Image (tube, rainbow, N blue to C red; front, side):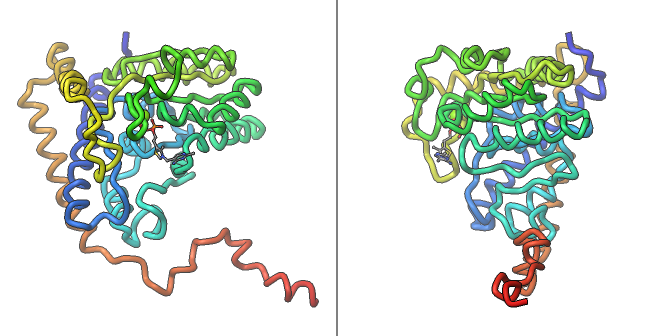
Length: 335
Ligand SMILES: Cc1ncc(C[n+]2csc(CCOP(=O)(O)OP(=O)(O)O)c2C)c(N)n1
Ligand SMILES: [Mg+2]
C-alpha cells in the first residue's frame, strides 16, 4: 500500500486540481484569441501525468508530451510559467520564442516536448545513457500516446534502451484515440503493455485514472530503473475526454463511451479516496479549489499585463552560443 504521507496526499490533490483549473483558464484564454498556438487538453488524464511524475526524485529527468501539463507542474513549473508560455510572453520559459507546447528547462529536469511522435523516446534513452556514462544517478521518464507507439522512433528508442538496460520509464498513455483513430485500429495487440515482451522488458497496465495506483506502478518502474534493471513500459489506461485539440469537436467519439469515462473522473475518484480515508471533506477540498482558482486568475492577469519579447531580441537564444558567435564560413576560409 501507499507510503505517502498525509501532506503528500494533499499535494497530489492540489497538483491534480491545479492541472485542471489552469487548463480551464487556458481554454478561456484560447477562446479569446490570447493563446498563441493550439490547445491540447488533458481533461480526464490528469492522474496519469501527476501520478507518474510524482514518483521521480530530484535530479531525475522528464520528457513530457502535449497532455502532460500535470507532469510539468510536478516538476516545478509554475502556473505563471505555463500561462506566459501559452501567451508567448517574454517571461515565459522559452522567452516567448517557441511554440506554446515546446518548453522545458534542463536545469529543472524537464526536456522540451517534441512534436514528432515517438521522437522523445530515443532522446530520453540518450539522456539516460549519457547520465550513466557520467556515473550520475538519474532516471529518465517519458510518455508516448497509443498512436505514438506505432512509430519507428518509439520502437528504435525502446529497443535501444532495453538492449542497453537504460534507466528509462516509458509511460504509454492509452487514452483510446489518436486523433480520430480508435485504439482497435491502431494495433492488433490486446494492450500496449503486451508490446513490452517484444523488447524483453517488463510491461504493466495500470488504471490511469487512479492517481495512487499510477503512482505506485511508476514508483516500481523508477525503482527498477534506478537499480540497474533497465526500462519498463507502463501502460496507463485512461481516456481523452476532449477532442484532439480545441478545434476538434470529436463528433466521431461514441457518447456512451464518454459518459462511461466521465463517471470515472480522476479528480472525483481521488476526492472520494481522501474522504474515505477521513483526510478531507468536500468542504475542505472546496476550500483548496478556491485558493487554486484565485491564484490562477491572479497569475493570468499578471501575465496578460506582461510584455511580449522585444523585437530586437529576436535572434537571441535561437542558436547555440557557439554557432551564433562563430565567424561565417567564408571569412574563416580566407584567413
Ligand atoms: C511522426 C508523427 N506523425 C503524425 C503526427 C501528427 N499527429 C500529432 S498528434 C497525433 C495523434 C497522437 O495520438 P496519440 O499518440 O494517441 O496521443 P494523444 O493525442 O492521444 O495524446 C498525430 C497523428 C506527428 N506529430 N508525428
Ligand atoms: Mg491517444
